[in-house]
Length: 256
Length: 215
Image (cartoon, rainbow over all chains, first blue to last red; front, side, top):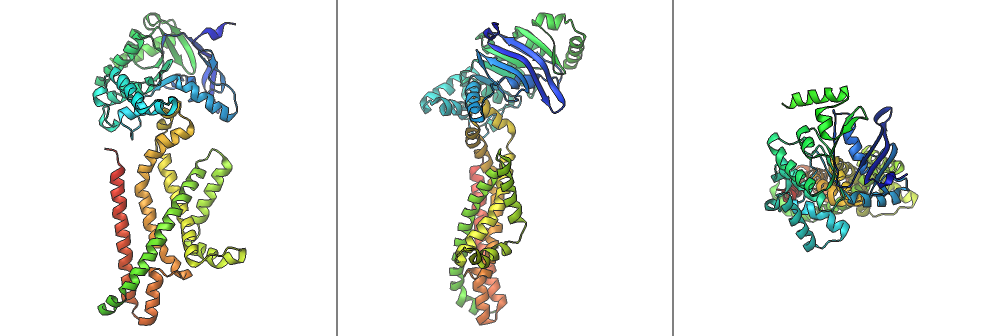
């Protein structure tokens, strides 16, 4: 079997809360540099699947592999903690509600983890923060506290914070869903920029246009299963499954 | 009202007020330490530790502080605990205050959005790193005012140690009533001094609360 050749590999992912099964035997491979969008109605399990990749929502069955290493290894508690902290340093995550640290400035949000976990000096970390915040167009607000930033600005700082750890993989969990419509573009621009740099990304999104324009592959999930997957041109333009058509019809109508 | 008498005895009340302040400070420090321990226990991932934390809180909030002081001071020697009145006062009230502070501290910690810890863990922080870098600095800011309320209650509760003969404000007032037969003046004097202590503490807490807020 050569299946560990894939950069990200999810094998037979299964997740239940009691008797409620939210992920039903999902397998998914993502190659280095690929950008994959996961779409689907709320409650379809797409966020749960994304959060399983860095074990934020541990699977009840199945395996997650990243770059040849199993993420959700079965280990004694202490060893597992050490292992998962190392894995998570390699995976950046961006949340719907930003989750910036409100007691830290934009700069401190970005420098905290590299200083604490990678032993960067204050000067090195400051330089890193300036680079990353510049990249997301937030250098001019570097010493602002999150309370003084707009939603779009917060999300860009959150992306810079994740990038500062130099991740191999970025996960976006509805990164623009909580934003006012006029602030969505500034975040999408940053994500596009990452796409141009061939960052591997898995994106849970409700934005079909954005998914169509940047993603190599789209997964449509419903009720814990992948209903349909393929390049955006196929999934969006010529979906083969009724459920996909139904979802897209509703969603695109709702968005218009 | 016998103002002359009040003017004559008030220096003794000031000395007593100093004892009340010392009692309050030591009780508050012990209470904070117990509160921090109690809150850690209540939030532990081990069920047994959580149970011990919960038992501590319900035991000490569920019985009168006066009874707790009596058990410690009068009952203590029977089981080999010998404390002078001041020590018993500080320890008894401190453990009692700690039970209330446990809930204050725990409340502040659990009110921090769980996305905060998640964001930290996602960056690769350990559970403990996320706690002290992300959760505690935010929770500490939220704790200032409710801990101020605990402090206010605690200062007033120091009056209870008069019952185990610690020579603080309330005990001093009672003693002077014995020789002057002027309960109105003596309790009034004690009351005014309590109010000054509590007012000053309240202002200090409000100042601290403003200081730590993020602008």
